[in-house]
Length: 172
Image (cartoon, rainbow, N blue to C red):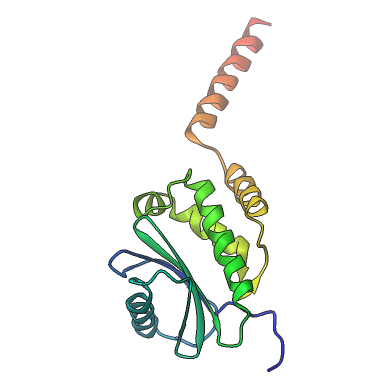
């Protein structure tokens, strides 16, 4: 088989009941939402009761990790190096752990879904692994969120500063 940079077929996170919380598919192996949901359910049924970290299903290699009440999955082809997939999974988990303040659980994930998608986008783009160092991912995501626009506090600060400038210009 020809080597390729397109190593990741999918990344998804399911809750304790096997329901999708976050998912990104990077090729057309499962083109419809229905096919994706069936695949996720099959993966969950196979992995939710085992302690291993690697599964093989339908010609694909799946690495996974559970945390409190969620399951994180990284899917590659059957010929994909498990260590590469595990490095993506570890980076995803560690990055999420940092942005969720060490609480990688369903409620915190749902509250910070935008950050979770940013993390995933920094790690994998179109099936190509971009980054496997969680510190680099967190740094890039924090830069983006800090740069995302004005917050309520910064709006209040801008208004206060404008008031002070008007006051000083009137006094002159």
